[in-house]
Amino acid sequence: MQMAQNKQNFPFLSDTGRVITYEYPFNERIRTLLRLEDLFEKTAYFAQEEGAPEHHTALLSLFEILEVAGRADLKMDLIQELERQRQTLLAFRNNPEISEEALSGALYEIEQSSAALLGMTGKIGQYLRENDWLMSIKSRAAIPGGVCEFDLPSYHWWLHRPADVRRSALEGWTKPMLPLRDAAAIVLRLLRSSGRAKNYVATNGQFQLNLGGSAAQMVRITVGVDEQAIPEVSANKYFLNIRFTKPPAGELKARGCERDVPFDLTFCNL
Image (cartoon, rainbow, N blue to C red):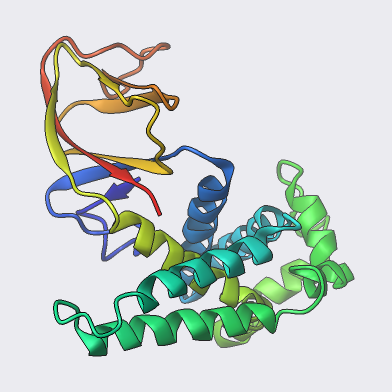
């Protein structure tokens, strides 16, 4: 989810004006890239702070990256997608309607990202798995309250080191996986820019669209930030269904909107 008013405090929430944009991936690969994007941005955000609780949160996010990135084919998927996009961009060479400078910059970025991915050897995050101290923290963190000082005194000691020492350690543990972050960012940026928004209205909070078997990898739904409506999506290659519900206010079950809700809809596909 992307929300405008919190961009300065939380950089992983992108500014889209006075609107909220909800992104719904249609396949597991895009889900994985969106999760990685979110986790890398949270890790970077909390790692740059001063406090021990923030650095603890950054480390937990790094452990989540390790889990999400554990797919054996993730790196190769990204390399293949970057190469496909490179070939697509090369077809625009000498096109008078395309800026050669912008095109060269995009190609250079893709080539650098591909080279960095190819430079990653072994299983993703294996250097973290080989760190017994970090893995002891990771295993205890899965237990509610499992990282108290009496459980992990060495971690308690580390959290009392100077902020710049902790920050340097976090950067060192994160840096070898940054090629994944950069490649995912390129693919998601291209995916998001591939669609064009159209205006619709959900009558009584309900909307259905016949897709006619067309393929999409992600849909983006944008509503005004002051709209008291939250979209819930279900879709296949034939139909897209959106049900807007009211924001939670202590109810045990979400309640549907009973009014018309205007929104923008964007289909994204590489």
